[in-house]
Image (tube, rainbow, N blue to C red; front, side, top):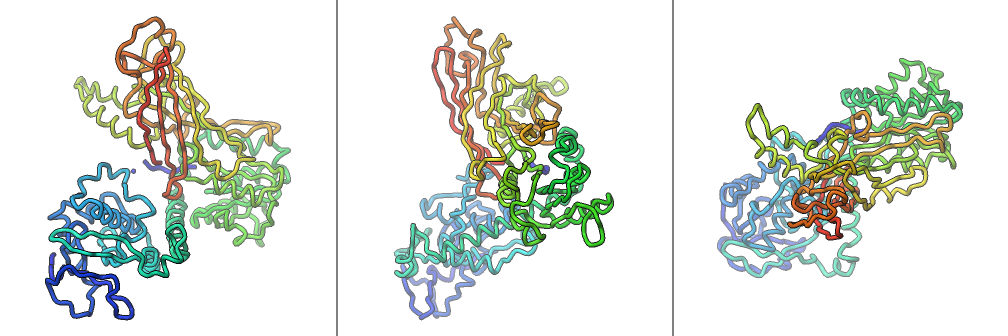
Length: 575
């Protein structure tokens, strides 16, 4: 299962206010009085510049100042990067923190916005609690795109509690402000555990919960498009593997209770009903698709309710909350089926939901389909890149574009179909999962593999990166009559998953050891002057901080035929 993707000014006062409920000025020490303070605060209309000590009566005037004087277009960045409220909130805190560390810091020092350094949960905590800007920024074009139903007031309340901190300002200079975070009161210090009090932890939990719910709603909502389901059903490799597993193993399906996690149109549930299941529970979190699956089940006369005598029932629910939607007993399911796989196998992180369903609803010894998943890796050559295209465009050399494109792909994963003739190494097993026994935390893993050049090669070839793919198995452990395999390999017909391509920052020249033997090689290891005979990989795959995304780290070490080694810097990819 996978969807398409892949990527004004006023300077009335040089002081700020931290007025407590009892009227005390608390931790403030003023550095100077360049204006009058009548004690009424005016905190809602006092906005401190992100880069200097200028004050403004509105966030719009502040951002215009930042754009003109500091070359930081906040609204432009939000729009270009499609930043929602959370990401924008974190961006402001990130900028504040950088300026506090280095008064000369500027936005141009951010090297790559595709990998935003502010995308860290720590920036959900206000760097400065009295920062009016955090709760006042807005932009009509951006706000219209934010998800409807966002509990903005509740969110702001939590964010304010999360950073119950104040500023300790000993001096305000002509063009900068030094900001130091200190607890608001001594009681807070006493209640802290590892820097967080209980209320802070509760706030953080609520914030994470909101973010997860938001991502889930977007994720399940994206599957409301019929085009996505047409693409998946039209993938014959995918659909027929599941069809054969369900229809050609009668001893497994006949009379069984079957649960289909993430049923979509209900195609797998229909196969299960056709195979003779006594009850089929189709679980779908998308409201629209749950209604569609219900209508399809009724049209095919397999739906079950008070008015229909079929075997298939549709539950509009996440599987983790299924018992709130239907009457079901724990460990009452005979067969658990799901098409949960994403790009690079684990993108979308749906596997954890399937494992939850296994542990909660599947009978001891019950079947899970598929029951194995295996990831493979191989090295690819120039033919799998866009270089050949740009080298000859109607007789013109545009290779400079190809090289720039290749540099860009070294920062982001690419999903595309790779032909086996463009592989320069043999395939190697990277990771195997036993879905019947694995634990949920085993979804994150680190594995090693050694890539070796194809033995039939008679000369060195450049390895431009690695390609990842997966197989899922319906093995004879459960599919006694007809075990089958669903493969997304470059050696088999292509699927809608294609393969996942991770491009090296620098290509590595490889050649079989017999081609290199006896040669007196000069030059850096891995260059065309001194090819390696193998590439040692260390690959880590982990669920990213952004819910349903994954991070992939890639480390490569080239080894020459005489044992000399060269390592390249680790690369991080987010999918």
